[in-house]
Image 1 (cartoon, rainbow, N blue to C red):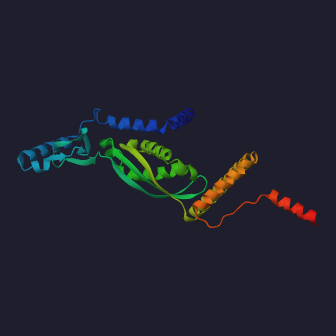
Image 2: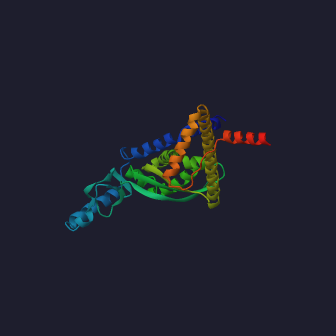
Image 3: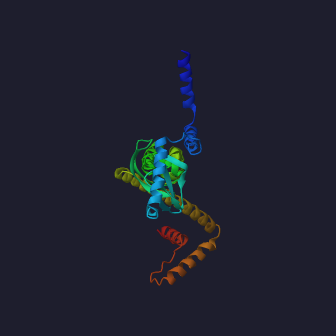
Length: 301
C-alpha cells in the first residue's frame, strides 16, 4: 500500500506540473546531451574513424570534393558521426570539414518560414459553423532539437497549427470571432509556441486571414443589417420632423407677436417668386376684409 500511495502521489505531482515547465525540463535534458560526458565510443567506432582518416590521406586531394562542405549564413548543418551527435551539434555557416563514410549531416534553414493553414470547418460556441483560414510564421530556433526531437518539424508544426486553431476558435462565439481577431491570433500564437518549443521551433506570428460564413447565414445577417438601417433612417426622419415642427411653432409665435412681421414675410416670398421667373403671383387676401363685407351683406338681407 505504501508503494501504491507513493506512486499515486508521484503521478499527481507530475500532473500538477505545468506543461510549459515539463517542456522546458525536456529541453534542458536534450540540450544537456551536447555538453555532458558521454560514454566513450566502442572499439569498432574507433576503427572506422581510423579507416576514414586513412581513406582521406590515400585519396588526397580528390577527397576534398567529398569532405569539404559549405553552408550559407542562414543555414546550419547538424552532424552525426556514426549515429551520434558530434561535439557542439552543428557546424556552419561557411566552410567546414566532414569525414567520409562515417559522417552524415542534415541542413536546417533558420529563416522565418510561412504557410497557409487550410480552411478549417469550426463549430463556434453558439453552434454556428464557420470556415477559418490563417497564416503561420515560424522559424527554427534550435537546429539540433528540431532534428533529434521530431521527425519533421515543419510538418508537425502545420498539423499542430490546425488543431490549435480549432481548439481556440471552438471556445469563441461568432461575434467574438468577427470582432476579436487580434486577440484570437495572440492566444493561438501563445498556445502554438508552447507546443512547438520542445521541437526547437519558435512561432513568430499568427494571422487570421479569413472567416467565411455559410451563405444562408450571410443572407440572414444582410437582411438584419438592412432592417436596422431602415429603422435608423425612420428614427432620424421622425426626429427631423419633430425638430422642424418645433421650429415652425417658434416661428409662428414670433410672427404672431408683431403684425408687420407677416407683411415682411409676404414681401420676402414675392422676392423669391420673382427670382424664379414665375408668371403666377399669389396675392394674400386678409380674412378681416372678407368678414367685413360678409357682415354688410348679411345686414342688407
